[in-house]
Length: 193
Image (cartoon, rainbow, N blue to C red):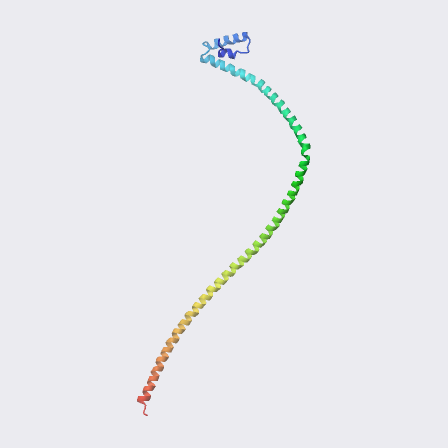
């Protein structure tokens, strides 16, 4: 015959305890052991038993864990001692190499810092010269613009004076031609010879 859920729940109980438990369940639930109230009561009992066994299970796990941890610690100590004696020379060599590399890096860093200071100095000088060049360029541009305006004004005055001279020359030429013609006409026609 196959064990029922109730039989599994009563496993580990004495026959008398199982009988009392069965009677209590029947009185409380009044029904078939596969009915919901009976199954709920069985489930509750199973949860209580599991909760009651948890501290014992956890204690066993803790004891096992502590034993394994102690064993691991012993193995680590033995391993570290073995490695420590074998690696002392290697550690000293690494420390020496590290010191050499540290000094080399410090030297490179110092030189780089000096180079950066020089580059900064040159950059400031170049910037100063560029700013001076820009100021001079602005000054020269302004001077060229002023000179161009002065030359344009001079050219304009020259062109006006040239126009006046040409007009004066033309008038003088007309006047001299008129006077010359008058004198010629007077000399040849109007003057008694």
